[in-house]
Image: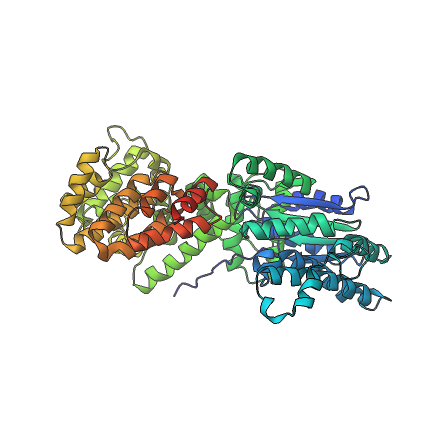
Length: 569
């Protein structure tokens, strides 16, 4: 049985991506006396390695006794009602844990925490949580404005906190590493930034915020308002908060190839020291601008199998630009590859790993073309693949097969060639795993009908919907799967969603499946027009999606705003 190695989504403790070039100047900025206090932003899109960089920064500082490293993740806070207070309390808690024996420190931190506690009382009262438990005099006292000098006043926090840090002569910097801010709801984003700017930004404090800058800017804009003024304010606000922005580089193809090879090699290498030597070798070649980064391995104590290096090159060349430049997407693809290998072996399907890898790339990047391959009768697949590869290799007299897209040329020309390999059992397995349509399931008539559902003629779409509604439920379900299969590989899904809404109206039994399919295969490409269509469908399962769209901070701001507008009673 194939032993599947799965890669988790946790930040790496080992620098496999050459981020040391980014970490080094950040460490210099943290120690620079003229930058005190300072907030540093580590910017990259989802999965770009931000958490790994934070881990490398923390690892480099934790052994220095003059630094106190505090790692915080507002996304994981239980107390979402008072994010500011939680951020402040984490910093104070770390100070007390480190310097608890210092004379007077515990009393000072307790005084600061008391100020936070009074602020929390105000939050709880405003939410109505404690109103029924307090007597009138206590309520009046809680809301009475307090002078800055009073011990239960939050307004005096900043000065007292600055004095506390100044008294710690053995401490040069408190470095707060803020992770996953871009995953938080808008209120939590702004509350975290307010805690940093208004209360904690005093000498000796350094903040390193890892986040997708666009996501944070959108969250600030939503907190202010949805008008253009909110966008402008958000940009200026973020510039004021973050004095030193640092953008992580996206992976170049040769970096992606080396990263993929290192992940695969780590699964095969039993000796940690040997793997570290391999990583170090890769780093030296990176500094020397030598490509491939995993070349000239003969002198190392251990080196990955040549097949692993070839497979890494295959994956790096075959994945789309959006995925090959993103470490998290590479891991996700490798996990899918490992699981697919194990399932194939468990079913007794004998296909080499490089063949599985190439077909999985076809699924991932060119789903319509994979559907075409799967829909071709088994006896004709070898001829299709021979023509496909001949066209890609520019063999004289061979033209591109029908239903095969021009964009697959590089894929078809790459090794291994598939025309002479028995692929029937594997393609059947893969198609069933991804709900693809096999030739035996989807007739030519039904395939043509599915095409008409998203065709250019509005009148013909209506006729196709009427024809589909008269067909058996099994055919209607296949039509839904066919539409969703196409949605996975096209950028504009508006016509597909419109067709799915029409099917849900006429076939209520499929509404739940259609809603789940839209969530899985169309979610990130929904536009405001599709939101309006879902809201006006009068199909409960589809209408319920609108509120989820309104609350999903991962979607574009105009899409969320459209959902909020149509969701209002």
